[in-house]
Image 1 (cartoon, rainbow, N blue to C red):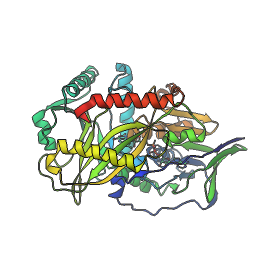
Image 2 (image 1 turned 45 degrees about the horizontal axis):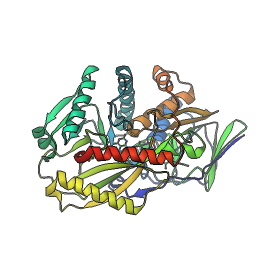
Image 3 (image 1 turned 90 degrees about the vertical axis):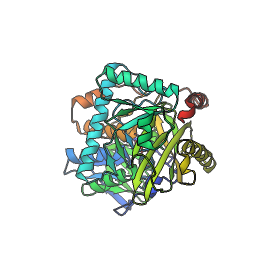
Image 4 (image 1 turned 90 degrees about the horizontal axis):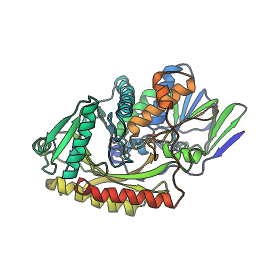
Length: 442
Ligand SMILES: Cc1cc2nc3c(=O)[nH]c(=O)nc-3n(C[C@H](O)[C@H](O)[C@H](O)COP(=O)(O)OP(=O)(O)OC[C@H]3O[C@@H](n4cnc5c(N)ncnc54)[C@H](O)[C@@H]3O)c2cc1C
């Protein structure tokens, strides 16, 4: 008999602007009573909902239940910057693309497989272009070092025959309306999502086939007589097979402890404003991974800019309001430097969210106990990697063999971290040094 008591639950830091401006089209229901199912999925983010969609395709008559601790789209899946990126995006090494040609080609193929899965869902559930926009993205450079990083990245894309285009300062200004950038590197394969809308639309689209219970944290997970039972505050679900899509919280279920880095990153969204120059929407990633992600979106009320900066390694599930306010002030300076004409447009929302990285850039994936599957640790690109992990977990759990799954399984376990407080000290020191080196890119 196996028994896990979940002592630590997810918590939110600040209000996500994406969630605040997104409409919810379906009522929330929490679990009340004891039920059984063929499949239980824990977590309703990219991983959990993608696993649910894949299971509903593979086993259309099975009973599938999803339990979510909070409310759909209020967690990290509804508070990210919305870049579904096909090309390499390694955040733990200081440069996005550091792997060999073969590994890079495989990573791109896997990312595209996940994006295609998301695109099929977007099509089937009638998501609008504001929710799911295959526009591509630009790695923007504001320093000579950023230009060099873009040149290196472009070279690695060229070697494997990947489409890309360099943009000069003039083109960057035509797109963004800002003279801040020296150049950019455009890659066409990224999809830009409104993350809260995407996650809500995915949940709504699945509602005919999947029962979703929100505000229903799993507090205990135990196995007896070949079945798992997940207990929450007012009920339980018993199922022979469970897929866990809780990202870094997999440690709280007793797995991958001491192997996962919990990194917060921070974002702010402006109030709506009337666009002056440049395109209506654009999406910039920093040429230096430690710089600022800046995106302009169109809403019914006008344009808004969303800026994301900073990474901090924390062992807590939440950061303080004081930290949020301090970083929002830094973001204000970054925004003003790029768009001085928007100095009077305030930030309406500031928030943070938790990423999960592993030292060796691999997921926490696989059958971790009999009938218990982990689709966790997204390495900073969960819109894509967690979508893929969710689909792969459903394939693995149903015995659906494919070349895709074989390759996905052919990865080592996340590497062990140094013990605390050494991991905390070491990771934060490296992050801070890299952020300082990023300079004007941040
Ligand atoms: C500001 C910011 C910007 C980002 N930008 C990007 C980006 O542009 N592109 C990108 O790809 N990624 C980005 N990310 C990362 C991305 O959001 C995550 O990788 C993604 O959300 C991971 O998805 P997931 O489904 O694995 O986990 P999560 O989104 O964390 O979902 C896990 C779910 O499990 C639930 N859960 C946890 N414990 C329990 C429990 N005990 N019982 C029941 N439910 C539980 C949680 O409430 C949560 O809803 C960003 C993140 C932040 C914070």
